[in-house]
Length: 449
Image (tube, rainbow, N blue to C red; front, top):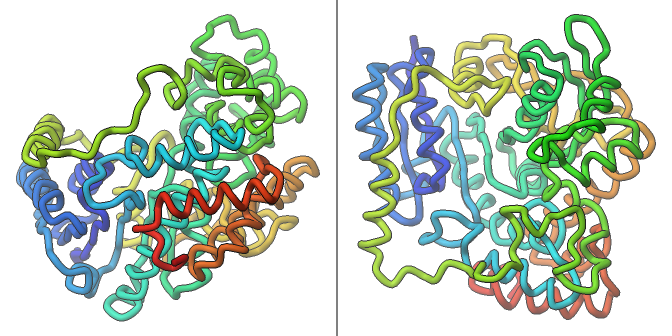
């Protein structure tokens, strides 16, 4: 069995404490070389020690090593896995950083109250503007050192990042998320069935997708799902915004999390203040405006920070086997299927290429795809219903503007993206807000200055 070179980019990210074990226990990748690269060498070394410990336990003959240089890391790579949050070397989690705090609080001063701010709205745009230049640098290095590599991106905002790489580089990119799987598991819980038994067809882009067909053992169960959600008494199983929206549209929002879904609509820019965020979302963990919720202070003592990080890695135990791609991300299984040229169905973010004929061919959609030795091909879904097609066309336009603005450092395109976004405000205010947002991230946005 031929071994593979797998490079992890942004390897110090907490994401890899889950992904590395998943890869290490995948038998079909036995003997592979896993190279870790991060602009913070200390973090990648900690992750390398973590990976080496688990590799010895896994018994799959894999070797884990951290390297200093990007060119050396990607040279000859077969696969690349990325988790780059655009918040600098010291950030373990972009959502707790001063940068992301500014992404949320500056728009709030202009009447835009975001909850998650990583996929839509001003916050989603700023995450892309900071991250895309790093991805361009990485892809240029891969075009030289491993032009046939397959890059699996996990970072948000998923669609603009993947679109920028698809449009401006020759690297083959697959976006990996778990939102669809969360929605399928939630639907199965509501219906009281095994999620593996559900046949689910959906249409959408990352973090925004709708179930258009759901069957269980040959029976249409979407009406029953809608009924059971409507009659649900357990508050933990209710999603007030998604529930109401699903009733209006007549299809079920698949990603069962109101904090993502509501940011695709204008409601958070129509409030007198943050205390009026609707649908009880002030209680959501992503709510930024509650008392005591402040950004993490920059670590003054890096030794203490890394001691805590190392302890978190030490607590991770080797899983019994690779994660299930039907209810999780299934990274190990996906890499194995491509490496072995085996046909296997996975949930991926890839260019539409006709899978949804009434949406742009280039649009990055979250689809079911079938693997082969060249990567993943999307499976035909069919036309999006009118209401959903209209919403998605606007999101796809926003994604295109954000990708172009980030690559070219074009403020006008960034402003256009803010105006296309559902949380748009008056253009003169949007321009002032944009100036503040760019200034707050100036050190990470050389293309704009």
